[in-house]
Image (tube, rainbow, N blue to C red; front, side, top):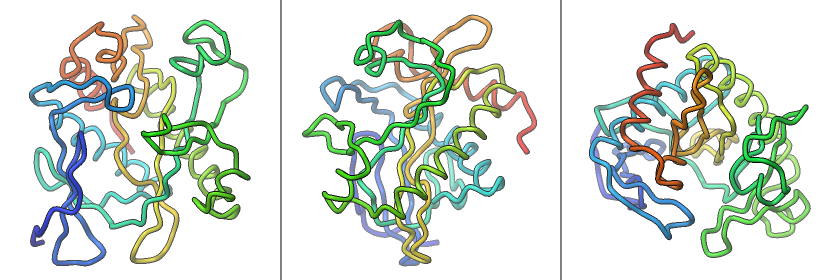
Length: 240
């Protein structure tokens, strides 16, 4: 696989073309950003951890019938992925109410509802990634009703699988942000981007220790050390 020109240079990742028009290479950086790029810092080795964790989780979803863009891990920082047309929406799966959702609803951070909550957000930093409903997403021509139904169905299936896997590793998945795209090879709606402690809230089931980007958001722990604990816990179980 030949690595070619850079297609995208984001805060936390780069994307490169390859000699196959339907495949790209993701390269993970050591940079962490929060609050829509208001806060940022560099943590040596963090990109390596993100790449390893995300590759593990995306491969797990692929093997359990949830289609993602992930093809294979290429090295410490890179993975081969299917090229997609980005759908600028985020589907957020909540097992607990935490972070900005807790503030918005006026409940204690970590409140455990009797149901799973699934939110839809417009992925737009300038607007602060606002919540939108399905009618608004269709009105903005971000997706069709059929695509949104597919995205919600995939998100619920992926959320259940990830919740189960993390539980086996002694981690509670509080929430997870999932992004989607239209695969360039088939047109299918598939999960894109990473799944990692950057995009999930993860709490140690025994101690309640935060093992995710909240370490950086709240200045409570070292990001790389927390992510390494997640990787160690996942490596301690047999992932089917």
